[in-house]
Length: 153
Image 1 (cartoon, rainbow, N blue to C red):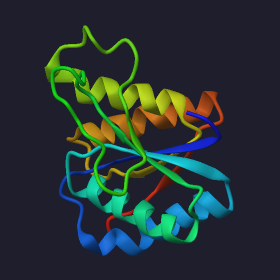
Image 2 (cartoon, helix red, strand yellow):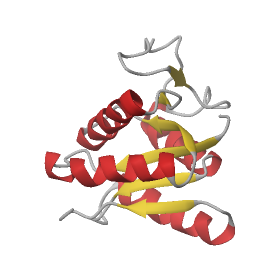
Image 3 (cartoon, rainbow, N blue to C red):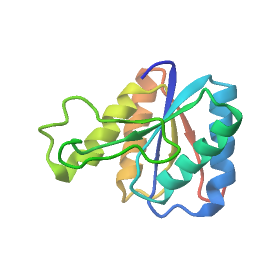
Image 4 (cartoon, rainbow, N blue to C red):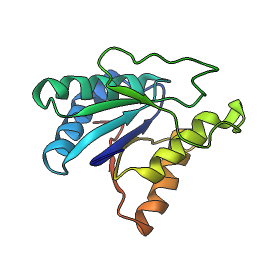
């Protein structure tokens, strides 16, 4: 990951209503923070909305890259690069991680590697919320900057 990078984490059941706030956050990260690479998963509504926001922003900021996080080894679950994405990323050292925790482990790897996080995580009984809390602890130690999208945005 070169340049400034940003990862997204959020609830699977995210409503389309948050899209304007999400797009605004993406544009702010490009223009204010100098983010050139966005990393997103593909396992729910928030990931889909985040990818859509970056794809739209790429129309105006063509130097921005959108990377798909792949939590399962590509030889086991091939993941061709989806339309609008610039590539995929499989975190190193994930080969021995059990499938049951692969998404959580891949997400943590990326949180530990990026400069920014855009999060939509508001209910505590979820992996998204736990990862956002983990990121907050990292933000206290490092230079990770977290932008929270609220449910009513």
